[in-house]
Amino acid sequence: QVQLVESGGGLVQAGGSLRLSCAASGRTFSSYHMGWFRQAPGKEREFVASISTSGTNTVYADSVKGRFTVSRDNTKFYLQMTMLKPDDTAVYYCHGNYGRVSIWGQGTQVTVSS
Image (cartoon, rainbow, N blue to C red; front, side, top):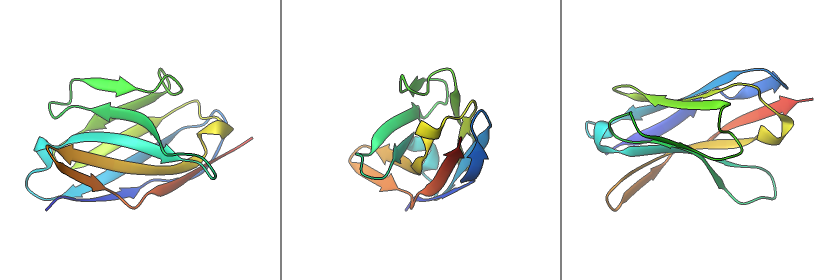
C-alpha cells in the first residue's frame, strides 16, 4: 500500500546543500525501514544512507558520512545533503522495506556543478 515519491532534486554548486524528500502514502509507513540509494550514469546503484523504523538508528556510506543526514517523520523521509561534490551527481532513490515487501520511488536527479 505504501507509495514513495521523491522530490527536492536539482542543480547545486559544489560545496552547497540540498534536501531531498520522500513523500510516503499508506498507513504502514512507520513500519518500513527506509533508505536512500543513488545511481550515476554508467554505474551500479549504491547505498547512501538508511534509518530504522524508530528513527534513532542510522547508517551511512563512507562516501557521505559526516556530510549527509537522514531523518523521518510521520509521512516523509529526508536526506539532508551538505558539502556536495560533483561525485555526488546521480539519480537518488528512496527505498522502503518491511519484511519481504520492498518499495522504490521513481528517483530524483541531483546534479552538482564544479
